[in-house]
Length: 265
Image (cartoon, rainbow, N blue to C red; front, side):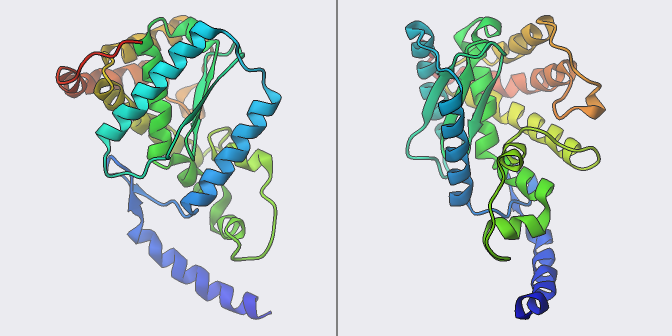
């Protein structure tokens, strides 16, 4: 009963903090309420589950490529955003999965599907995808999405302020990037994607990969014929929109690329 009496005042105070929310590395205002260590733990649990249920590629050459590109992308991210807290180490796994996809989870986990290597025709194109996914982690998009999708009450439940409870796997995967809802979640998700694209192209350029290949990668994606719903119904921008945003960012990214040693993977 005491907790029920205190809760409305606590929530009112918490709502008052919304105007003082933090910022992403690009300067966008952001509300992300879940503690970083908890996000890292959830990322580790999700990654372990995937590793235990999904086949892992044994292709030695492909694994060397993925590890090389990931190592350089992480170094490029650290050089691009030196003020951020980075995981002590990044775990990178190439999954034997035909869909052209990759992901990064809080706490320093990167997963790449083998099918992506059929669409990403060069190491730089693979770097474009990895830079994008690492950018999601650096910008704390999973935390922000968790806050948005589950709402303040559920977030408080997760961090233990309303009592004990278990965090379902389906909700976890939604928070980390799978699934969304019309109205609020989808527009924010497209904002996340554009922000990750802009951060990712800077990261890949700083890592020594030609940023022009980010445009080529998405042209390949479009040519691969993967169907997309209308943009207003999608968590991801249409290929054409994404390519346009990347092209607009190329001048600055190319300037960065000219200052570094080209990567060799």
